[in-house]
Image (cartoon, rainbow, N blue to C red):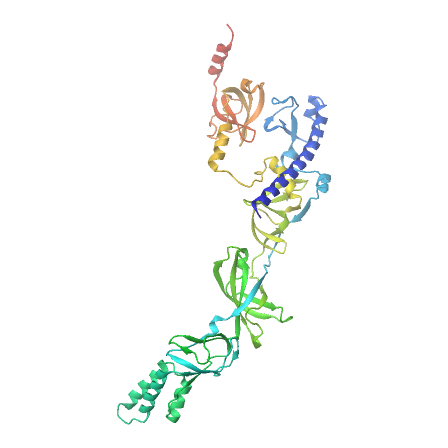
Length: 518
């Protein structure tokens, strides 16, 4: 996918997410407006069957209050947060009728063997292992050519050409002269002369004929060494050739190679030795069995494919070099793994996520590691569990809404350098001056303090929760202690303690005396 298409897709997803957010916020505002018309006492217990954990300003969700009242940030009443809603963990909740209107469909995470199967296109070539090269070892001339066209079929022992080679004649004459020699050293010399004929390339049939009739051949016939076709013909009748020049190139057809193009992402399906089946359009209904003998170590930069070399038996020479065939590779045996419908996976280029549906209409966004994909099913290597429900339609809307609520990082096309992100957070943090208060609760992740007014924020005295300081909390702090502390606003909208120290009664009374008017 090009960068322009990707950017357009992200923009479209965000627009639809904003639309979904508007629908959900509209329903929430209707609930909030109904509560605003009630008295504070009515808000404190809007539903006796539901437990209120705390109150907050929807515009500053990180700030918590232990009782109802006016928001210190804007002119509106605080909204209660119930225990059954807080258990959602910050995910997205959508009513059943809204989910139905949005076309949200849900599927299951199941565990099964993926059953990878790969069908690739390939072309037939000669089996290079069956290649025979007929070559001249001496200078000479072609006096007669029996095979006059390339790609002619030949049989083993079939005459190819008659050659006139002066060096062969001289070697034959020397060998014939030594055949009838009776000297003591004659056998050794005769054997040496015979080996010279072999080294010069005189065919074995010609040497046996000389042994039988003691005659020198003015021309010598060369024969086909194997069954096959003459794939290359380099000489013509009457032409001269030099020592070392190739005369005939003969390829066998008892087996052929098929070069199949395998996508880079599916090379694991075609290990060396894997079985394969080929189908040729020229032979409908017939199958050819083969085996992968090599996966060539080169990736095509344009198609991102590797070449698998598959050897096939070729009875009756039916597979001809140049044919196109369809090759199906047998899938290797594999262990069952978690599978989800491929349409449930959202790929952003930087990560892959799946929207998990919870009981009661809640949704979470889970980061996953995706494996192979076959026939509409994707393997999940991590991030999900068997039996979970995942959204397979409408998940882009839910992910966009979850991004607006800071449950996950907003879908984006690029991520800036870590140093730049840290700088942005540090600049936005402003440390507020020391404030005094009394600790009312100490939790693992926050400290609740009934603090005095904060003039820099135009806050009245109130009780609220602060995130624990990064350097930790003094060991001697406990509920009921009077403390002096400073805090900062975090990037998520909450507040975190920067420093906190206990105040003894002497310090508190001395400060009260200094502030008392004289």
